[in-house]
Length: 349
Image 1: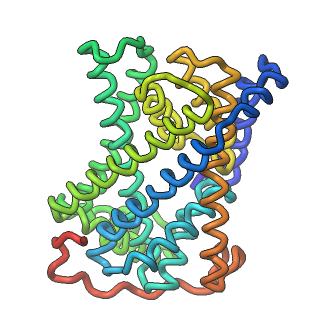
Image 2: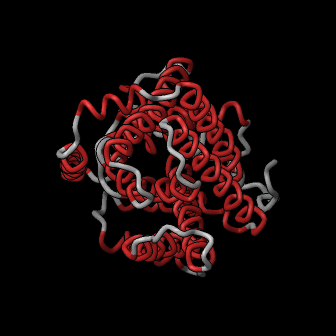
């Protein structure tokens, strides 16, 4: 959570990115580019994109399984609500909304849910970096003729350190003896006396949420489903390229996808407005796409991913008889989770 200062930084960065991509663009040319959109490909791109949520739900089932086995249908609605909230609220508040709604429906502690979401993000980042590594390798052996800028490789290495460091932290919580006790001692020593018991409870629930790391099969499953998610997402980017009459290789759209989604760790306005378009222009520009064409592509793709998820999320929120007032200001904590099952290492279907 970035807080008010982080929200302001995000808005400023988004505004700067919008200025950079629009400052030299002929608006008449931009409109002409968007008017040439082929709607059949647009509909196809949206349909393909929405299938990623089925895979994301199955992956989340695997991560939550040590705490509670939750049916696909009930879990998918919570997922859409969380992503919808991320689209319209600042500072990724949707993650907290998702945790609250799951606690309300299924009795899973918020801290446990947030731990699984944190692990989701780590695997998303590692999967994107794995894809980037394959693209760089393909470039090195001559399968890709387009020159990849050194900044892309440097940025990939930096992002690798961030995500591997985060993965190392959650792995240490699970596998390093006394790690939870050490953090508990630090909380008791440095946290305010009134807050310390609550923080220790949160820590305990968070550790429960990383229990999925105990199973090698589950880890492989989560990584594999993450790769499927981003493979489908790359296909969405490619279909949108066809919608704009682009004939660049598949590589161009996967590079753009990696850039746009790794940039999600940077503060921005809700829905990645500004940063999304900036990195679309940057990524496609490496492969000879003009700024006007890349900007029109980024504007439409951003909306194609934003609107369906937001509308579906609102629909699921209403179906749960919830309001934003309720999920942002809950009156009580979700119930405690059940004891971890003895067969926690088994893989969900």
